Length: 113
Image (cartoon, rainbow, N blue to C red; front, top):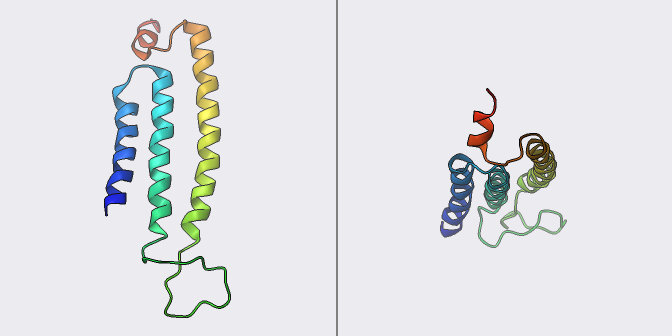
């Protein structure tokens, strides 16, 4: 239960950074933090039973708790997507800085005319 609260804290800290910041780079970093918290939550869902083992061995007894491998595979996919989104967002941020000369979103909105 404590682990879920900590993961929820990481997720909420990332969401606060996304919604509460005006610097474009801080928003991108907060997006990465929020997805990290989400990935931790997805992985922890696979371990509901205490002392769960990996389900890859053939000698697992039917009474033994095993971890669900699907959340782990989904988390690996989510990490790859997060890296691609972060790279794309950073390249767009560099283009915005080159075009407008600032990372501050409030100044960029004022420059639109």
